Amino acid sequence: MTDADIKKGLAGVVVDYTAVSKVNPDTNSLLYRGYPVQELAATQPVEAVAYLLWYGELPSDDQLAEFVAEERAHRGLDENVKQAIDLLPLEAHPMDIVRTAVSVFGASDPAAFDISRESDLGKARRLFAKLPAIVAYDQRRRRGQEPVEPRDDLDYAHNFLWMTFGEEADPIVAAAFSVSMILYAEHSFNASTFTARVITSTMADLYSAVVGAIGALKGPLHGGANEAVMHTLDEIGGAANVGPWLDEALAEKRKIMGFGHRVYKKGDSRVPTMKAALATLVDHYDARDLADLYNELESEFVARKGIYPNLDYPSGPAYHLMGFDTLTFTPLFVAARVVGWTAHIIEQTASNALIRPLSAYNGPDERHIEGYVADA
Ligand code: CMC
Image (cartoon, rainbow, N blue to C red; front, side, top):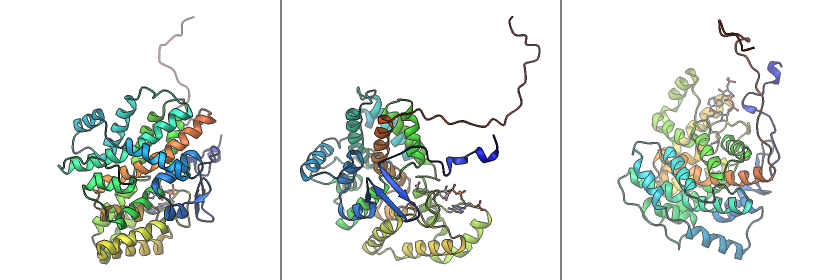
């Protein structure tokens, strides 16, 4: 085996087929079950996109009505999940709260070990319905606020914002939030989805795979980047500071959060759509200073390094303007990506092969315990 045989980070390795989504960095496109994600974000509610990712087709009016009714019926937070969250320290990272909450929810499901398609689709749909309540409950808890019950007269996006902030969202805000949820819903074999597929490949249950995926998403090289973008913007402080801040950060070889991508090297296909949604929020909240800082960092960094923003760059400030705590940004990504993860879990189960790559050993040569004599 030579160095050339090692595919560090699995870069460029095609591991399996998938019919869930197609990423094409050459044409800068992302298709969900064949539909460009931009078209879905412009025309569909979050619920219809979730249905598409799970079932392969957009729902008819009747199918959507039935799907939405079930989603609304499952929005409430289970008592044992609430109790488990309340046992955790207020200082715990919200990603740890979400990871634990999903684990408790899964441990309480008597059908957890049933990995049939029918059973897993039911679990996926219930997790999709519950996650907003988990995320909202935790943000309110950390702010010392009482939880807000879900409302079944509101769609997914409006209800999510209602449960988090306790007031009805402006349609501009709900529309931008809905776009972000659709753009975050799926992205082929990214690190967290691949983690979910590895766990599924052992025939472990869906909840174990989702809990593992949440762990993988937490890191700043993946989903944790939307939180890290906001820390970066806070650290820079204003557009006028961008130049000197970048001089120092690049001299220290720091990674600039929200830029770069393993697959897209000419720009992330989702960014223009999210950037347009961010622009509506900037106007709505009259957030010129933040917009100036955002634009200045983007143009300076792209000019210096030729590395383009990824989805986390516009979504971080968008969530900030909506009023979410910075620590809540990656849990929002979980609430959206649970759809993609579970679609992949179901696909992996349907045509499973245990995922078990090889490694090249570079430790000490064979050696022996002094004085040890093997039994004859
Ligand atoms: N800031 C500074 N330099 C960078 C960045 C960045 N954000 N991204 C890549 N580079 C440089 C990197 O230092 C390396 O330079 P050199 O060849 O001189 O060592 C070169 O570009 C290649 O980078 P890499 O890290 O080897 O490339 P990769 O394909 O493994 O990395 C990445 C992809 C996402 C891990 C990386 O771009 C990164 O760390 N970005 C910042 C974190 C981030 O925004 N993550 C979100 C990813 S996309 C959405 C999501 O999953 O949430």
